[in-house]
Image 1 (cartoon, rainbow, N blue to C red):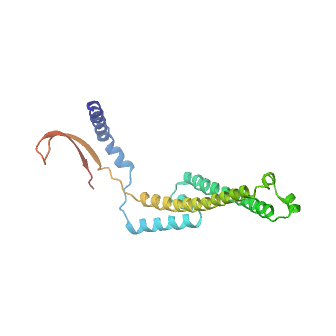
Image 2 (cartoon, rainbow, N blue to C red):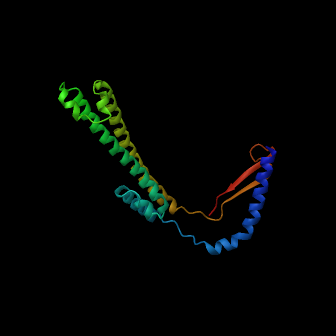
Image 3 (cartoon, one colour):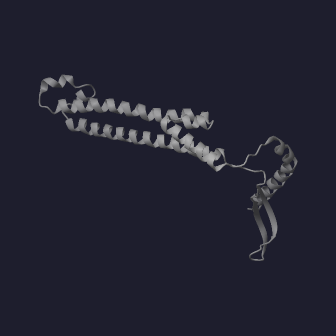
Length: 193
């Protein structure tokens, strides 16, 4: 516990020394603008609508292009799995229908691997139902990922206009507590503009 406090104290002391030396150079390099709420809302709306229309477009608008492959990968994977399950569903549905129609001449139309279990149509039906459930999950995950894409674009647009000034500080101070009057160590966070 004491080591942790000493490490935290040392880090704060070094940070305050570095901060004191670099404040002037930071002020020269940073251009702070006044927060415009209407412009921020317009940017959020623009990014959200673009992401809703075409996944990844809102991320491009926010200049977070590295997120586009993640969005497309998530949506593409769920789309691919949906169509793969849909093909299996059609095959198992047709195999179940042919296995239960009572006409042995139709059994040659049953595709593999269902042909091997044509005498057990309940197994084919159970597989068909499982594949149908997987299709439903794929649709659900596709919709969720699309929604997360829109939410991510909106949050990025909100944070893009978030103003961080150089007047933020964290200080460790020893002394008496103002409320209790007992000595101790406290953290003081200053947020000022």
